[in-house]
Length: 407
Image (cartoon, rainbow, N blue to C red; front, top):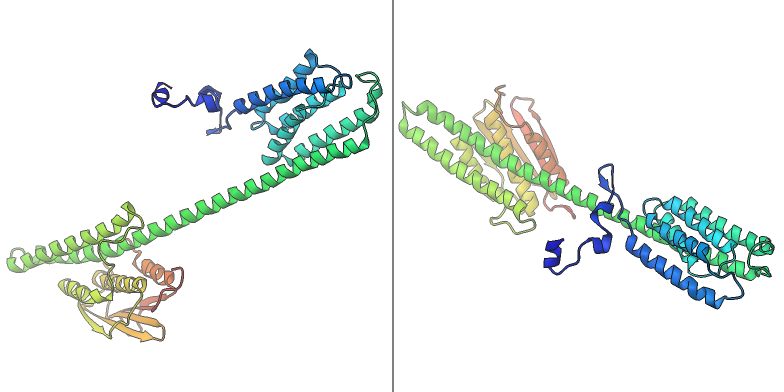
C-alpha cells in the first residue's frame, strides 16, 4: 500500500475492497464484492425514497424505521449479487413486495429488483429472474386490486389497470435488456475462446514447423559428422592427412549447422521478423551433393528444378536433404539418384538408392518420413516412400509449383 501511495495511486481496496474480502473457490478467485456500487445504490435508494415520500404524502404511508430497514435490506443484499444471484433476486423481490404491501411510497427501491434481475439473467439464472419478477408483479396486482382494503394506508383506492400494464411493460423491458446483454456476453466469450483457440493452433503449427526444421537440419548435419568422425578415428594412425580432412569437414559442417539452427531459433526470439539469411532451396542442391560425397555417398542429379514458390523450394530442399540423410544412415548403397521433373503444375522429385538396408541402428528420432509427409501435405502435395521392386528404396514427392492460398 505504501508503494502504491508513493507512486501517486490509491490503494486497490479503494476500488475493489480490501484483499481479505476475496474468496477462493476450487483454487480460483471468486468475483470481487461490489461493495462500492452497492453502497452508492443504498444511499441513492434511501435519499430517493425520502423525496418520493414527500411527493406522495397523503397518498402512501410515511416512511418509518421498518420502511428504512426494508430499503437497506433490498439495496444491501445486492452486495451478494455476483456470488448468489438467485438468492439475491428472490430476496430483493420479497423485500420490495413487503415494502409495497405496507403502503410505503413508490420510488427507487424498484431499481434494486431490476439490478438483481439483470445480474441473475446475465449469470445464466434466467428462470429464477423471470419467476421473481413475475411473482413481484402478481403480488403487486393482488395488493393493488384486492388486499388494498385491509392494508395501509387507510382509504387507499384500487390502482388502475393501465398502471399495471405500464409496470408489466417495464418488467418485460428490463428482462429483455438483460437477455440481450447475456446473449452478447456469451457471444463475446465465444469469440474470445475462438481467438484463443486460433492462437493456440497457430502456436502449435509454428512449434511443429520449427521442430521439423531443427530435425532436418540436425539429422543431416549430425549424420555427416558421425560418418566423418568414424573416418577420422579409423585413419588417425594410418593416414593422418585423411583424418585431418575428415576433421575439417566436421568443423565446417558443425559451423553450418549452428548457423541454420540459430536462424531457426531467431524466429522464436523475434516472431514475424525477417530472417537474417534466405531460406535454403534447390539452388543449394550442389552443396547437398558435396556433403553427401564427403560422407561417402555419390549422388547423381538428373533434371533442372523449375521456378518454385519459396515454401515449395524450401520443402523440396528439405525432402532431398532428409532422403539423402536416410541413405547415409540406413542403406548399404554408396550411390543415389535425385531426379527433378515438371509435371504440369507440380514438381516430381524422386530420390532412389540401390540398397540394401543395413539394418543397423543409426540413431535419430525416426520422424524423418513423417516430417517429409507433413511438409508435402502442408503445401497440398504428397509423398510416397518405400522399397523398390528391384531392390533399394525410393522417395517420390509431388509438390505444387505454387503454394496454395492461405499456406
